[in-house]
Image (cartoon, rainbow, N blue to C red; front, side, top):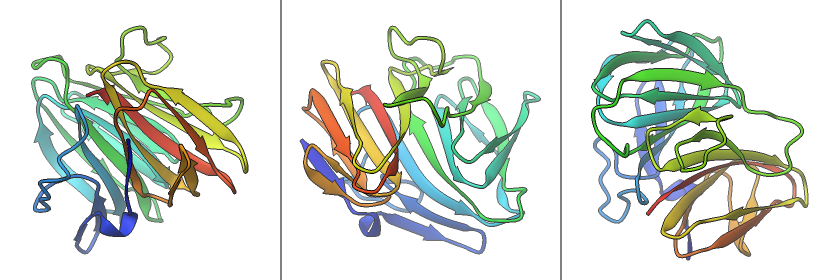
Length: 233
């Protein structure tokens, strides 16, 4: 089953520095029909003003993945990790037994990103953080950026979750395919461009819930960038 949640029907939050859309219930936005997909609990679409961001705060027992769409985000945490993740790249934070971190836009322009929370396979793992570049050339399909599935090839950032975050840049008229194993579900967003997923039209930044599907095909008429979470249902 392919279900599309249009971008203009996502949850909303806005203040003087953050303009956010929520694919699932988060913060003060509550929708009992939008509680996540399998182990995927949060998918936030954030725009952060220059020089602003999320001041130090804590998390525990969550895998938090940030995919930067435009600009860059600078991470600092109480473990001594610090790094800048720029557009098209991804960072993973293992909250585990507890971590305090800040995520700031130190750029001169707004930063736009997806923040994705996935429930870990077990509580109490060692907290940590890492970042990697998204290979922007040479790929003809989805590339695993973060992967905790059995058999992960080790090129992606590790996840303490039975899930993978994958991305692809596809050209005009190009089709990519993805196979879901037994008991797995997915959630897909076109961060740029439009696509059809198994023949169903999907707009830019719409959310696509994928359940009870073995295979999907995504085709873009004009080119698109796709982010997909494949997760245990």
